Image 1: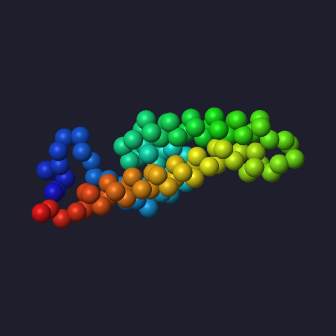
Image 2: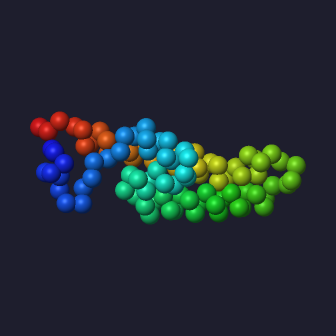
Image 3: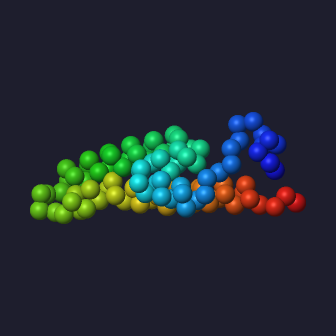
Length: 98
């Protein structure tokens, strides 16, 4: 399939490693570049809200990572999921035609 024969509204997926890098540097944006903007925004909101909750449930004696554990957990899941989605899209787009 050439760029001219792609269906309208379809774009070639980005390399999964690039999506992984984007997801690590900009939380939630890896989903956006994979075509799932709503999912990326949802992940961002969960990162902020769970980070806020875990911040207020811990004492100042805990480490920064401990205080933000809820948000960091969702961040880690978000990065892995963005890579998984990008990898599936990449493999689907580069599968030889039957």
